[in-house]
Picture 1: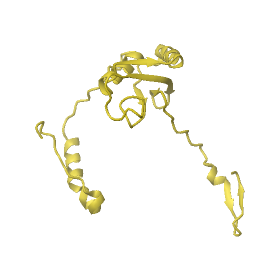
Picture 2: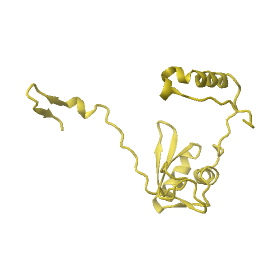
Picture 3: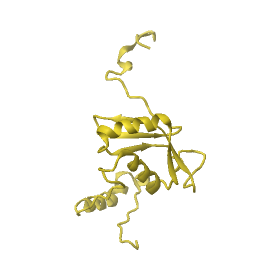
Picture 4: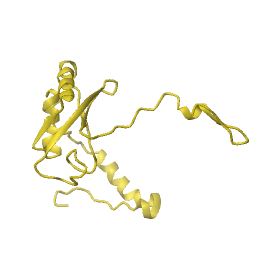
Length: 158
C-alpha cells in the first residue's frame, strides 16, 4: 500500500467465480494504464552477460559457474543468437540451483549445466545443474494408437 499498488483479495477457491470479480476488475483497470517494460538486461548484451545479470539481479547469486558443455554452447550461440532473450530453467524450491537450499540462500554460485536454443520461439533456455525438463509431446499422441475392445483386451501401440 505504501507504493499505492492496488490490492484485491481473491476468494475464487471459496466463492467460485464471484470471488474473483474484484481482482479481475483491478487487472482490467491496470491494463488500461501505460506501462513501461524494465528488462533485467539489454537485448544487445551477449548471452553470458544476460545470464550473469539474471543470476545476480533476480536470484542473488554471487557469480555464475558454467560447465564446459554450457560454456561451449553459449560461445557458439553468441555468434548468431546473442540478441535472443534467455529463459533460466531451475528448481522452484530455491533461488539457487540446489533444491536443498530452500528460499533465498546467501553466498551461492549459480551452476549452469547446459544450454538449448528454442529457435522457433526465439529464445535461449539456460539449464541449471540438476534440472530435468519435460520431453516434448509427439504431433500425434500414442494414445490415439491404442484400442480396448469390448472384452477389455488392449491392442495397438503400447
